[in-house]
Image (cartoon, rainbow, N blue to C red; front, top):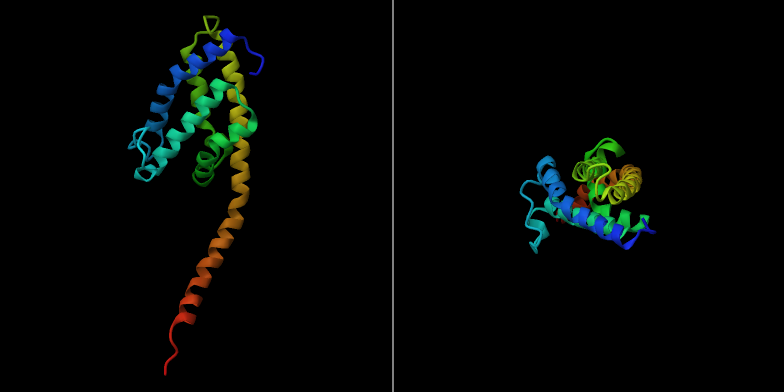
Length: 171
């Protein structure tokens, strides 16, 4: 998406702005616990952590799509959401479903061959790259889970020992 005309760039930004709302509504309605998402300008991310993560991720993805960013920025935009998905979903495809939903919304929003179809095609191509980056993040995070589980088990096993050692010896 780097070699776009100014007109195509403007249309890509317009499409991103137009599909952001419907995509946000779809995700909020389909993700458990996201229905009570805090307002986007709510300063307290702890009032609904899942909702905060969703809103932050959506904003970052839409900004990245509109600007045409590289893979590192793509991964940075999704890292928190994909960590959560690595814990809660069973496959990279399932974890990246939210991006497939956006791709479908873009397709429905811009008729093929109509005004903006070139910009929509570029967005779909970019979304394929985002989907690939999301799957990569999912796999990277899943690869870390066995080690993290082992570390947590060790901590859990050591806690009772530490409590026993810290008790006073009988006099």
